[in-house]
Amino acid sequence: MKQEALQRELLRLFEAHGVELEADEEWLVTEGEFPAVSAQWQEPSAGGPGWLDIDVVLSEDRQIEVSFPGHAAGEGGVREALQAFEAEALHVLLASCWYVTDDRRIQVQSWDLGLRQWDVFAGRPVPSPADMTIPEGWLTALGDAMRQESPGAELHWLQIFQRRDETGQLTREVLLDNESWARGEKALAALAWPTSAYSLRAFLALDVRDY
Image 1 (cartoon, rainbow, N blue to C red):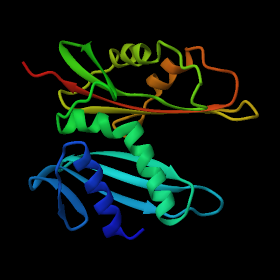
Image 2 (image 1 turned 45 degrees about the vertical axis):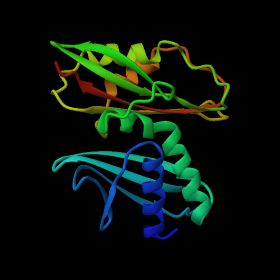
Image 3 (image 1 turned 180 degrees about the vertical axis):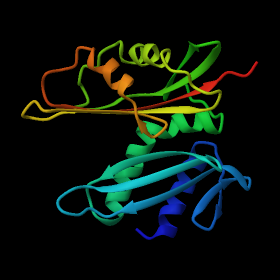
Image 4 (image 1 turned 90 degrees about the vertical axis):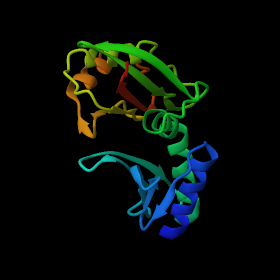
């Protein structure tokens, strides 16, 4: 899929959920300002999936980076990756960056971190298989881990990926603001996860509450 077509698909996706963006070269901008969105598609290679990389720029020095796989080449892979983006991260981004909240698509909580209260927008975890049993305390565990941090009074985001393959090998990655977060990985490791093969992705954002 050409870059112009990908940009149009992303425009339509945001518009379908109540956010109108404007094309400005390779970026989609919000009334000429931040947040701004861009997307790049990398075709599958060496037997692996293609990847849709989406950047949401919050300010001149902060941006959210998320990636989603698509296994087919061309338009089929792009549409698969866009569906994954919509299922996992879009509604969290809409709530935390554009203040368009759909309680049917995300879980909204309030966390006390330090002296501040935070609004937490948690997307529905995306498991495979779909009937995988997810530990009930996964979000609480991440909240407890965040209480050991000292987050600045700005938007923060968490990305979770966990996978156990058919041999039992476990891969776990938790990113806080695009960087590996060992305390979050330790928090999830303490939970009772399935012993069968599975994969899980999740995305959430924290925004300090205005009074």
